[in-house]
Length: 248
Ligand code: NAP
Image 1 (cartoon, helix red, strand yellow):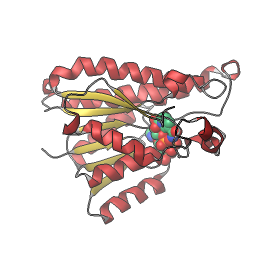
Image 2 (cartoon, protein in one colour):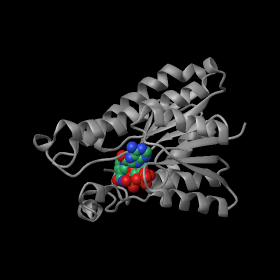
Image 3 (tube, rainbow, N blue to C red):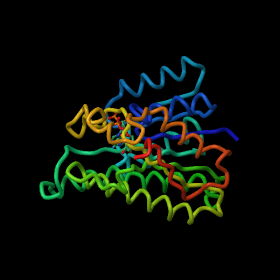
C-alpha cells in the first residue's frame, strides 16, 4: 500500500521536521500551512531535491470548509491519506487567565482543538473500512503543558492540549477495531518559533536549566517519535501518549 501522509502545519518547526523524516521513509507528503507559503515551498523543494514526493496546500485548520477542501485536494493529488499528523497548533502572548478575553480563548481552542477534531474526522472518513478505507494511523501533537498547566503563560493553550489527550484516548478506542491507530506525542520545550509567538523568543534558554536534561529539544527528536508511532513497529500501540520532553 502506498504511504500517504498529511501533516498540518508542516511549513515550520516540528511539522517541517516530521515532513522531512516522513519523506525519507517513503511517504508521499502533503504539508499544510496557514500563511507562510515561502516556508512551505522551501520544505517541499528540499524533499523533492532529495528524490521525495511532496506538495504544500494552504488551509486554516480552524475553518471546517478549509479542512474539507484540504483533504479533497490530497485525494486528488496523492490519493487517500494513510497517515495524519495533527500538528498545526498555536498559542497567544503570555498572560494570566484573569487577563484573557473570550475571543483569545476561542482562537486557541478553534485551531488546537476544533482543527484537530475536524482533521481527524476527515482522516477516519478515508481510513475506516466503514467508508471504503483500509486502515491508517493518526498522531496528535499534545504537549507536556497539558499536565503542567502553563501558569502565568498560557493556561488556555495547556487546556487545549489536555483536550487533545482526551481526543486521542476516545478516538483510539472508537476506531481500534477498524484498523486505525490513534496516538499522541507530548513535546516538552522544543526549539521552534512558537515561543516567539508567545512573546518570548528566548524562552527555551530561560527554562532549560529547569529541564532534567538541562537542554531544549530539537524538532527532529519529536519527529522520530511521531514516525515511530505511525510505523508498523508500533502496530500494537494505540491511545498512547509519548513524552518527548527531556524528563520535564
Ligand atoms: P511553530 O513553529 O509555531 O509552527 C506552527 C505551524 O503550524 C506552522 O507551520 C503554521 O503555519 C501552522 N499553523 C498555525 N496555525 C495554523 C492554522 N490555524 N491552520 C493551519 N496551520 C497552522 O510551532 P511548533 O513549535 O512547531 O509546534 C508544532 C506543534 O507542536 C503544535 O501543535 C504545538 O502546540 C506543539 N508543541 C510544541 C512545543 C514546542 O516547544 N515547540 C511544545 C509542545 C507542543 P505558517 O507557517 O503558515 O504560520
